[in-house]
Length: 416
Image (cartoon, rainbow, N blue to C red):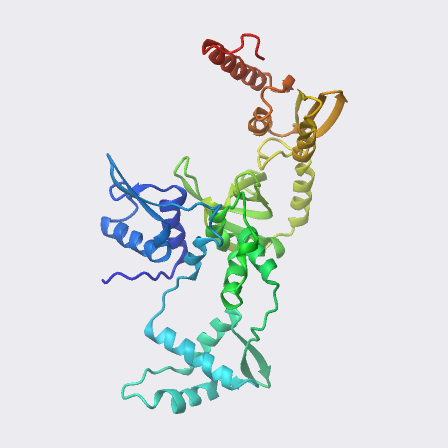
């Protein structure tokens, strides 16, 4: 079969992008998901969208291909191109444009039967071997256009009359540009910008999490389930265990990390009987089921738990809390340390103890989640305590080892 750069199933596109970009640097030999020929086709396919961002590196394991993007310099997310790739047959694309033309010429509306007649008399009869379209095919294509927001159908007696949707959307250019690059499902803004160009030159992002766009389809399904308070079955693939499982649950809320851009869905897991979190980039399919009668109860449970959640980890028992507390020192001209604690405290509390001293404290379900953040105050911590004494000792041992390492290299023996 001849190579084609067009793909119908976006989940395949998403998998390719993960292999080459998110988890990337795959060589021809390491790409074991499919055959070597499939590897070449996939690589060429991605090159047609992202050629200017492709990189190559030769090593002991062979030639590796990867996508190299400096998110600080790109004005528009280049991964949006993956969403704008779709497969079609000659018949599909012909019918698509004929219907658009007919609907445009009939602003007051036209029925399926009349569309068939107009198509036969004005569009197909001039060809020696014209394509044929039955009324059922046309009706299905019009329904597809309805779902996409291209056409609108209204009942006129017993028949349905179709019109072309008004595409005269009035959106501020700056708002559109900002939404496209910063909001979840920003690819929607990119589609609008293709018709009404937005000015991206007014914005630059220090943290530009462009890979979120690969999970937009999953995110939309989850948001629909949350809005409609419905149960779902989703497929989750763990990179750590390499296990793929189907999970029935009810989605409650979407969490997005401002530190790394990862997106999580908080769900009530029926099998475990508790609230859990799952990364969206590990989810490959979401099926909406019946309405959940206990949605409000589970949602209220999550709201109560949020008061004691530092991140997305809620695997410990709801009533079991662990206390974290540490005191930091800062100089007279370093009030930004105190302000930073106030800004980043999340579910914790910050107290100003006196000149140059302040204390952070929090009661959380999982103390381990705070450790990476607490480490950023290393060198200023004068006192620290955890409910989990094992974790506390581990933290202090890391400090002692670091102190020994720097002392051996000629550092200050009195360093804390």
